[in-house]
Image 1 (cartoon, helix red, strand yellow):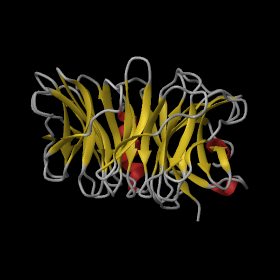
Image 2 (cartoon, one colour):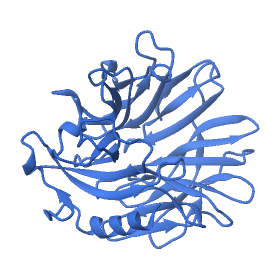
Image 3 (cartoon, rainbow, N blue to C red):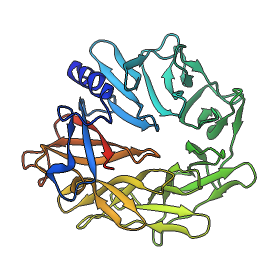
Image 4 (cartoon, helix red, strand yellow):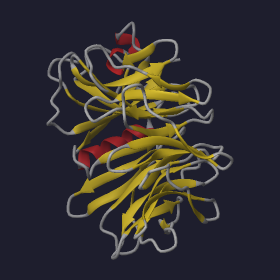
Length: 358
């Protein structure tokens, strides 16, 4: 992560949600815009520099690649940018999820293995541990009750796990014929989503204490699926299909799996997040290239680039997360064609918060 990025986000998040035209692109320049845009700066577009999550306070988590310091987990609030050093002996860490209390989960290497951690402000990352006999773990999601999810791995393979608020770890099992499972998100009712499968296929699942692990199936004609997020209503989002031909889905217990489609001219899409208002965000191919999308039951899938002010110098290509206030965390690239071209996808990614207009 560049110094300019750290400086920009530290200053700008202090002014987040305020109508300051110096840091927010106003929707007044576009009649159809629904969001103000807060530009958080540049992020080196590598596997070591990513943003991953957002809570309802607007706090952002991810990983930053610093000069000479390795990759470090971070949490970014309206007041400050803070690197998390990881577990003792670590030279790599990444934060993946954050709850409404600002508690963060992620992954850190150690001298012997990769381990999931949990962090609370004022403290240090704490090792979440692994299942008995396993050596490694990662944590991806956390709810307001401080229940966390991820996976544990060792000689027996990889298994989705749930860490309770008291630190106890529970294996969630695997789907029938599955060699592995991983969990990615958990809601306030302790319903967990992820994927389980083998070398030939993988399937999205939802797990609950009463029902155990349930195979969510796939869209018609698609052999694979994966679930990334679940809201408090139990609505699940993810994708179904093969790489390059995936389709975003929303699953509900009453209606099953619904194809959310693609943007015009697109051949694939992926849904990455859903809030309690059933707003879904993700990325879709379009005739103009990859674009970030917003899906709602009333309007279907919309290109987020059409819902922000015109005259910009970037293209949004992926929406990573949406919180319960409707604020969206998105990634974009520089665009020499003022929002209508493919953008320069070799350039560093830029990070944005999209703030709904009243």
